[in-house]
Length: 100
Image 1 (cartoon, rainbow, N blue to C red):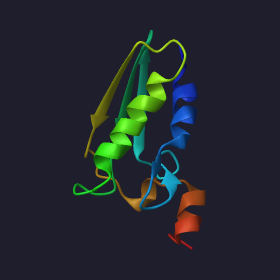
Image 2 (cartoon, rainbow, N blue to C red):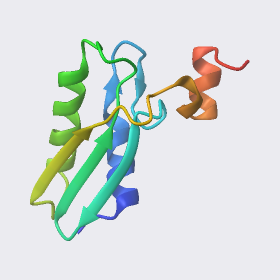
Image 3 (cartoon, rainbow, N blue to C red):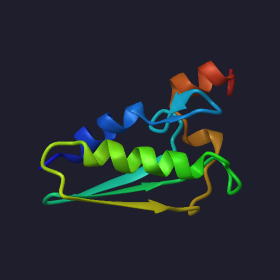
Image 4 (spheres, rainbow, N blue to C red):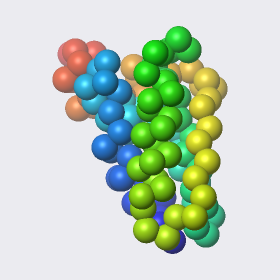
């Protein structure tokens, strides 16, 4: 069974193509729950009307499904709390020009 940290690390390959950064650095991945071989990823998007939302969700599912010992994947899109640039890593803020 994968650990939460392994799932988070694996999800670093899922990028928001509009911003060119992964969902972990952007703070879009809110939580990961692992129960035996079942994994749930709770995530958000930069905006409700994000045109790449379905693609990001599909990439999250596929990335987790490809992990060893994962039998079931659930994704949950949440808007609580709404995403804001403050959720980004310090590196992402620097690269995208926030808080410089």
